[in-house]
Length: 114
Length: 113
Image (tube, rainbow over the protein chains, first blue to last red):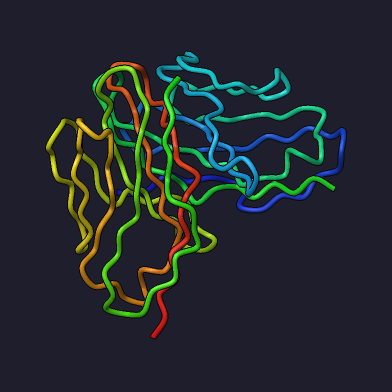
């Protein structure tokens, strides 16, 4: 069974640009969550999607958005990039809705903003 | 709010030494608890979990017991190997609250020959 796939693995963008990251969950998983990992703030929850609906949201500005498609694949978008958005962005998928307690992570997308 | 506190790293040990990484949590209610491991350049891998008080999670020689009375979930291994060098994260989640993990800051472990 294929794991969680995130594309691209690495990305370099310029301040002010926007970026879209993609996550393909494990087959059959309907929940996809996104996390930002930085040396200073550690791992922070961005948002979670389940059945194409945002179910949970972290404390990030509106520049961070996401969506989920009917095949459970998810994208996150960051607009008007800032230097502080440089981070490893991790996606996690989970097999069920309310009853699951386990998340499987992808390898992440390393975003560098210059 | 919910939070997880881990011991500061880095932790440096000799091969075959005993490992303990402390983790305590603050939460309203009874979450499920996890240890994740992150190797250099990789995402997170689930190491072990416990879903209720007194449960013991174990995997690859690592163990952790869910202690409700002390709100702790300390990670232990009797004999570490060089290949265990990684960053370890303690995390919690509430069943029924969606899939939102709250992580500790991570503890870097370096095992030397």
